[in-house]
Amino acid sequence: MKLRHLQAVFIARNREFWRDRAALAWNILFPALLIAGFAYGFSDNPNPDKIGLHGTPKSSINFLSSPYIQVITVTDLDEAINKIERHQLDLLIDAGTETYWVNEDSSKGYFLEHALNGLDPDRLSRQPVTGEEIRYIDWVIPGILAMNIMFSALFGIGYVIVRYRKNGVLKRLKATPLSALEFLIAQLGSRLWLILIVNAVVFIGGNIFVGFRMYGSYLDLLLVFTLGAMSLISMGLMVAARTSSEELAGGLLNLISWPMMFLSGVWFSLEGLHPWVQKISQIFPLTHTITAARSIMIDGTPLIQLLPELMVLILMTVVFLIIGSLSFRWE
Amino acid sequence: MTSPPILQVNDLHKSFGQVQAVCGINFEVPRGICLGLLGHNGAGKTTTVEMMEGITEPNSGSILYKGEPLGKRLRNEAGIMFQHTALQEFITVRETLQMFARLYPDSMPMEDLIRDFRLEELLGRETKRLSGGQRQRLLLAIALINNPDIVFLDEPTTGLDPHARRDFWSLIEKIKEQGKTILLTTHYMEEAYTLCDQIIIMDSGKIIARGTPDALLRQHFNDVVLTLPWEQLPAALRDQSNVYRNREMAEILTSNVDDVIQMLQTAGVPLGDLRVRERTLEDLFLTLTRNHAA
Image (tube, rainbow over all chains, first blue to last red; front, side):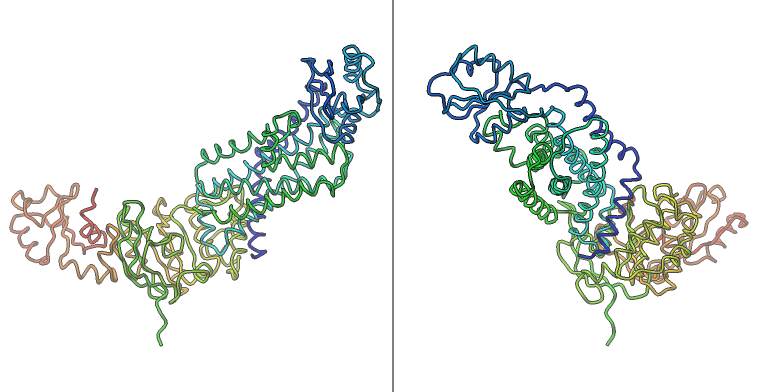
């Protein structure tokens, strides 16, 4: 591995990116438009009323049979109370102690509490909590930032390499002492740097114009996005390792990115989904990136608690990169 | 002990599916010469060259560079100009040269290359905005950037206008003067005759002739070509087996010029438009590969 080689390819790719004004503008404009759209279009929480249920009721609770609520089984009561405080759950019922928690600052909680007491009068004891609401925009911003990383990583790297292969740039480089691993690492480095800069611009701009919640450490968030971007870029490199057809590459990248976009928790919480879908979502690097970023931004979770997510992202990066470099074809 | 040839090709085979592109060829490339590889489209030239460059893997056979199997040494010491090469977009000529220079352990002084290939005025221009001739000059400069011992040039002048082509020939002559070995594939016989010390003619993946251009011409031809306007040729002579029509001209192949001239004088043909020319490499190429005229 020669630093000169990495430097040569890294610099050339950076120049190409910054000078392609149309692509650069789109890289910034796309997430900015999404954020603006969600900030003004979905200023109210579009999710149905969510009731957390801890334990199994000894006898039926009429309120839980209501067709207009979504009941989510929770196992960790403390975590669920925390969600009530942050308006991520609208009401929480502990069936064992026949207690319910409601956030006194939540309008949804207010009406749900009245419905509960109307359907099951004097049955459950009340535990009030308070806490600032997490708006949908606060919740969705980490997902949008991570999704932008995903698109930039997969399509930015995948299409570029396939185009290089198709028009002979890679063949010319093959005739030099540059190795496949050097080329791939330089591409990864270049795209990572570009993604982080573009995302920082979107983050700062979004915060100035829309304003969103950021309770955790900026450095922790940078690390999470760095590892997330590395795993997604490596995934793009792996997909583009052999094909010279832009159509095929586009199909493969869509095949990967669409399920990730819908099953990684970008737009809605995975909590209410079927357990199998929740399990499948764990194979996507985007899921781990969003989970960790959201925890930092909304809950201020320290990095140490996110180690499992970070380790998965590192492991995925290494595996994708090894497969990509072993199967890489210059032509 | 004499040093081995710079490249040695032994019993090389390559096929793509059912198509045999190269069928058991053997040859050596002596150091310091310009070797021309000629053949019609699909004869196996580019496949052969790309195997020698280490770009394509042969199915069987071996290639030795300075007596060693192909590897890192060839990559460091070879300069390559492919038939079709794309360069990265949005990058200037200077930046492209700098990028390739960083990929080699040793590189030529950049200013020398820029001067030799007359790139001074083009340094700040993006590569996609170069003309055909300018682009080929840049690609040749890139091929020379590592000060190579051997330079592979695959149809480097295809698509260039006659001025640009001759300009390119002068650059190749300069490379020859530096003592570098050149392997050139071309469809232009005049180019091969002008630049090459030795040529190899390929047909259907096999070598059908090899030697210096003049030796090959002497070996295959002992005649010359007399040309005169077709309408001046008496009808009685038009059907003879050594007489051919080439557009408006008649071509008479003969090893005895005096006899033909005497015959034409006897027939009352004016000799003012009569021309005598020697056989060319193009004649040789067409003769040897006439089965592939299509």
